[in-house]
Image (tube, rainbow, N blue to C red; front, side, top):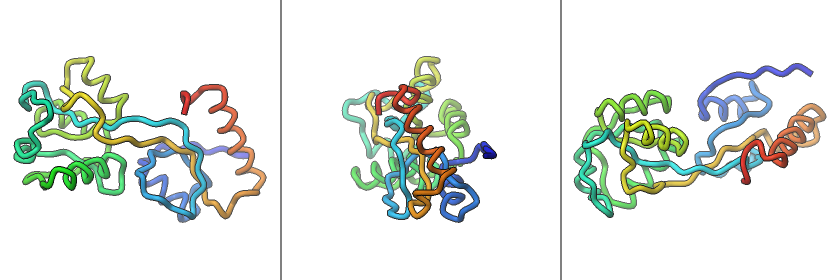
Length: 181
């Protein structure tokens, strides 16, 4: 058995699984059902709307029309943060006048902490940035929920090597390596 670990975005991992260049992968589930994929949920996490300290007036609930006037930093719509953004835009009936695409969470964090605009961060990143005083979390709670999954093409169930990988992931999950999910 040969194991090749690669780093890529969730969208790239999903494309690799679909086109067969990857056997399986761990990715953030963007919430779009795909019956061609089998998956194991590893853990859930919140997606938080964040801004540089002082960029947004503290209001509970947030003033969405005021926030709409600011620049927003968002990844593509097929990502979990992109879906969170679309959910907010649809729920509160606005589209930001200025929208910057960022293809990596570290890029989003840097732009948000630099005061360029507000944007979405995964819970771990959002909490770390908040603790470091780099951001304020708007509304104080997650705007969306997502999960990390181990995924593969469902038609490949029964393949010995893939089965070994699936068994290993189940074992690691049972041992608590990915939390209680």
